[in-house]
Image (cartoon, rainbow over all chains, first blue to last red):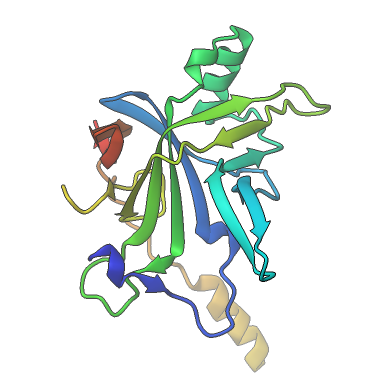
Length: 180
Length: 52
């Protein structure tokens, strides 16, 4: 289904649950990448746009606001080192070796909005609106903690965006921009 | 002379459930081994899972 036909699939006044806004990291060799849905054990995480804003007021008293750029960022703290977390292993190895190139500008990050979709009236399987930021960084900022090993991370989005759709909400989704 | 309650208990006790046939073993699900990503002009245009 075309991206334009996807709509906010919520009743009037119904709020979208947080779990329907999904961030997925993808990394590795181009023909055999790995993926991980981010957010396990993280209780609060938002995509912060960090806009660079410039305001000016003309002699008529009208204020204009220019947005020069945004530098989106999302923190995951705690991000525990857990069994089954391929990303935790990858980042732990990289940070302990101080291999900055291993985590700078090498991730594709998908933002999936499960609440914007084709709806149930479509004859085809439901697909969900998503964007992919290519060449993002996931920076481990610390490792340690008290009872369990925490590896807090910052996701820095590239703004090199492809708009598209995914066919499911598990990590084995197919992302397509609709041209392939 | 047995009363109705004891009859009910006796009936319940002798009721034997039929033996369940062994469940059919499902073929092993394909294992997800990675993802194939197609890029154009530095942007991801398609990303799909690869199964073994």
